[in-house]
Image (cartoon, rainbow, N blue to C red; front, top):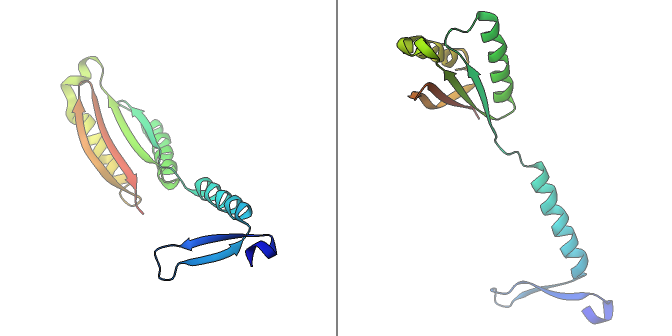
Length: 133
């Protein structure tokens, strides 16, 4: 029947008893499957990690600008890595950095969850947050 129609006999499910076959144009079928897979790859969203760098003695306006960026990144579905860099004598006041990161955590608690609590690595204090699903 497939030869008469000028099409191919394609085995769909070989494990069934009896095996299931379809009469179709196999080239067209492969092309449509390839297009469908490419379309799905195009639609999927990868989650990037965006980094926001701050200093412990940041001014209020600068802080608000950074927070707008953080909120925008979280709304787009990206993770955000907040990095606080200490220079010189700022290392003597690590509690200021911890207070700043706690303030950030409170400000974005409604749209994000904390993946990694603030921790000190050398002269940098880092915290990782991701959007709520």
